[in-house]
Structure formats: structure tokens, C-alpha cells
Amino acid sequence: CPTLEEVVVVDAWGEDGSGLSALRDFLCGCPRLRQVDIVGELPADFRVGAFSGPVRAAMAAAEDGNAVRFNSAEGWRRAAAHAVSVRDRRRHEKRAVEAEAEEARGSLTAE
Figure 1 (tube, helix red, strand yellow):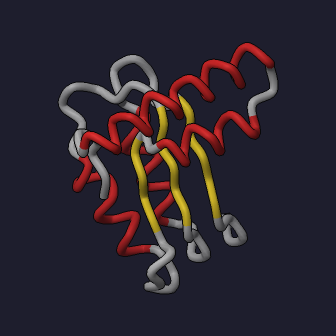
Figure 2 (figure 1 turned 180 degrees about the vertical axis):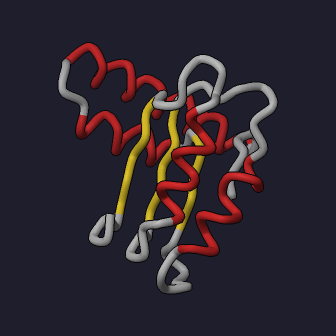
């Protein structure tokens, strides 16, 4: 992944969340990475800092624009824009609206 700069990951970690550590390790090996959006239902024991800390540390340039976000409205919109099916696109757009409301209430976990 030497050229990967932005990624949106949608529910790609398995029911038990076991794929999250492999995803984190993969992203840490992407030297040009600037933007990561993780969207979907995360396991109850998921620790934001344990995931995003190493990924942020591995990001090439420490620019203000670098981000690792979880279930953000912008992340859901990016997922919708790249969804293959109309059904998925609509589902992601709906989640974007929900996330926007959560962000407005300040209840969304951001890192």
C-alpha cells in the first residue's frame, strides 16, 4: 500500500471484531496515508485509542488534515459516494444523517 492516501472501511472486521487488529496493522504500513474513515457497528470492547494511536503515528506527514475517524457523518457520506448498490448508498446516506445528529449532540466518539 505504498500509494494509499485515503480509505473508507465499512463493516470489514468480522462479527467478533478480530479483523480490526489486522486492519490496523495494514494501515500502519501505508506511509502516505492521510485519511481513514471507519464506519459501521464496532465491537463493544473496541478501544478507539488502541486502534487510532498506532495508525496516526504511522501517518507520513503530521499535517492538520490527517485524521482517523469512526462513524463520522463525513465518513458515511464518503461510503455512500462509493457504494456499488443503490440499497447500500441509501443505507450509508441515512447513517450519515444519524451521525450528523450525534455529532451535533457531542455524543460521537472522535479521535
